[in-house]
Amino acid sequence: MSLRPKALLIITLTVLVGIAGTWSDHSIAAGLWELPLGLLLLGLAYEGWFAARTRLCLAIESRDVAALGQAVPLELRLRHDRGRELMVEIAPDTPEGVDTNEDVQVVRVAPEHGTALRREVVPRRLGSHAWPAQRGRLAGPLGLAWWWRRLDVEFELRVTPRLLGAQATLARGAHSGLRERPRVGAGSELLQLREYQPGDPQSLIDWKASARTGRLISREHTADQHLDILIAIDAGRASSLRAGELDRLGHYANLAAQFAEYAVGCDDRVGLMIFADRPLAALPPARGASAVLRIRQLLGAARSVPAEADPLRAALLVRSLARQRCLVVMLTDLEDATLAGQLAQAARLLLPKHLPLLAGLKSPEAEAMTEAEAHTWLDPYEALAAREYLARLQRNVQALRALGAPALVARPDRLRRAVFEAYVDFRRRRRV
Image (tube, rainbow, N blue to C red; front, side, top):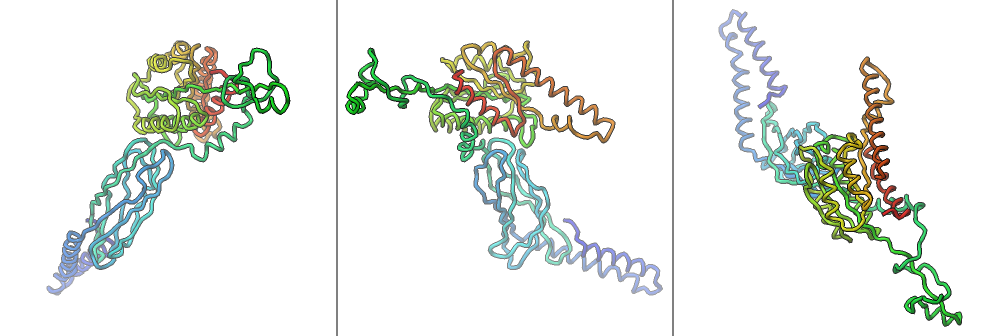
């Protein structure tokens, strides 16, 4: 119970009447303070009885699947069994890993049909999130107090990685200038017609074109390029660190899901591996929408593990999963990557049979610190530390590139584009 201003006013009046009665010479006036106090207690008893017998229900209506990092509208519908309008105060509670506006709302709940509240939540972690009971307060009918109520709800939100969707067309359009020149090969797409040359197999002769020209004409086809790709995601201790709006694992999962969708659209085979101090889950490269669905399901269950990542053990598993040359996209922390480190050893282990692409996140907060204006004596030291962090990160990238392993770091909002551009460039240059 929490008293409202009307009850506090009655209490103040009771005190004033009691003080006045104390200084009064009349015996009747000395006991007048009991009247407002008695009325207050009687009113509170009635409100407590009313609140205890009021059935207040809360239901959440929304789609049960949400994309990681994207706002989801929720409709909170309040109902009660009274025949009059009630005032309810509700404080939103969300599961861990789901953010929302924490402002307390006061609403008037109509009888019969109830009242709906609309609120947006933003999921920050993958997986299923069961909604906790909401904290509410029911206003008494006399306006004397708020009465606490626990509103149980049955709602679960399943968070999955983002889809590329309509952005796939934009992504392919953005890289249209990087299209490779068709090459002669044994593919299925016709490249050109040319005159027959001795030694050409009969299956290449275009008999219709030969009949029209009066001489033998052969067909040339483009060389098919179907890559094997394995995406390796670091789910170790560092993946739980916040990087912008999401933690690193969230950014990795979104990128992996969208990259798989994009690569399958290019008729490549895509697989997935999640690792920490040991391999946690793996899917061998496969082709088609079913491969993307399996990858998304595995990503949806991914969790950060409180253990240091071991990319060397992950590289050993890559060698067993990929029997032929493939592109290994490893999304991991590059801050501690040195020539003597495990990441450098993993790159050496994968090269030259496979092509590893090592990609990591750059802290946007550190970049902002390097350019921020100093306001306190501590700000210049923070800016120097941020510059050293960025310089060390760039040195690590250069060291990995010196080994022959392409490496890149980018801010969270630019990592996807950087990885996509590297992938398109590898296809254009036929590096895989």
